[in-house]
Length: 325
Image (cartoon, rainbow, N blue to C red; front, top):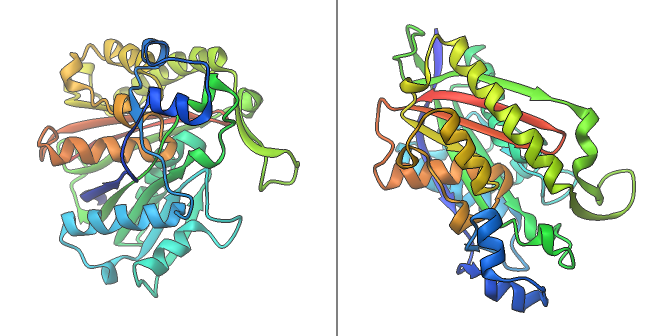
């Protein structure tokens, strides 16, 4: 059978880090570094310049991913981009990145699943590669959330940051066992009945409104812990694996309390959970690939390691992906 192997990864964080105090001063927020850190674990984030686009950030991350894999852009058959902050309603941000990279063949499209977008995009790429529709795929999460935040809402605007992360998937012959490298399985869910607790109010959509993010934080937290725990168990049970088989948990970086809860659920010590929320804040669809590339660069994740990725986002959408590097 064919398995989608992660051949390389790359990431990009724009500009210098912006501390909590600097952010509060920049926007006149009545908050403090101590308040933000105690509730979220966030110390700083990166913010894109006014002229930057999601495709600009995504293209930089994609080039690094290709370089780390030793693969030329001409070999890429497909570009799949997860984003909630596209350059425009159309053409797709993926098509713009395709052009940035000089790719003039294959196909490209966007996936809209909010913070779960990267897991959704990874699942789609994996299925298409197993079906023989592509051999080399770029999967990218790229976000400029600073453009959709209400800077008068101190409960949400301090939570997010900008950035992009990417992986290169390569179709590889495999026996299909859990010991073989590649994406082992993905597990996706959605419940549109909960769409109102985390959404963008209008914007580029058909409903009008200012196009700003709205979130009922306590409700999102409540759903996150239960749904992520369930999908993690689903992924492991589907492959006959236990918590002790997981070498690394790479969670969506939304809130340190949720991340810590998932680590405890898997009985993993903190040193086996990749955490970047303190320095990146919540970069939505970019958060998992940015965490992956950091742990890959510094040598924590090694070839053969079993990695569990999980996320929840607006929709509600949630999911998990199990991969062996």
